[in-house]
Image 1 (cartoon, helix red, strand yellow):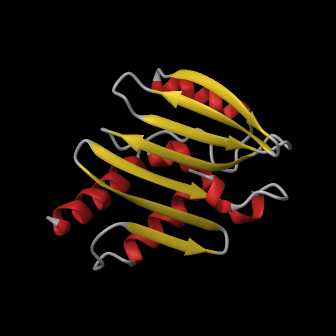
Image 2: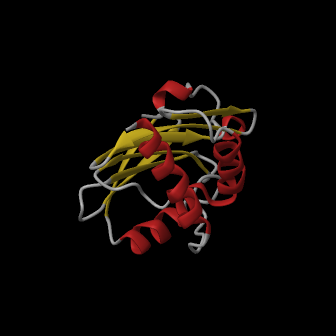
Length: 150
């Protein structure tokens, strides 16, 4: 079962490699609207002291949460739902380092956990129950703890 999950994750990475990229992680706040249109999602915004959270709810029940700094940069993304979102779209320019890190750990089983100086990703799940989060440590607004990205 774990081999199937890892194979599925690698297949999603390969499939997403050919998808058109919309800026998200590391992109501007305007990219959130591009994501909403592309995903045909409903959008809701909430504010916290040091950032804004943009929730995108797709018709299949997948929730994508994008964290935007006061400087207008997307510094974190979270997903959960029955479908794995298009990670190329959510990760933007950070997708290639993510893909390379997943490929390098090909023999490992279980959830994906990548911790690099420029990118942190945790992703897991199974059919109809995927979840994960990613953030760029250098883009975290001052005073924001990575644990707030959930």
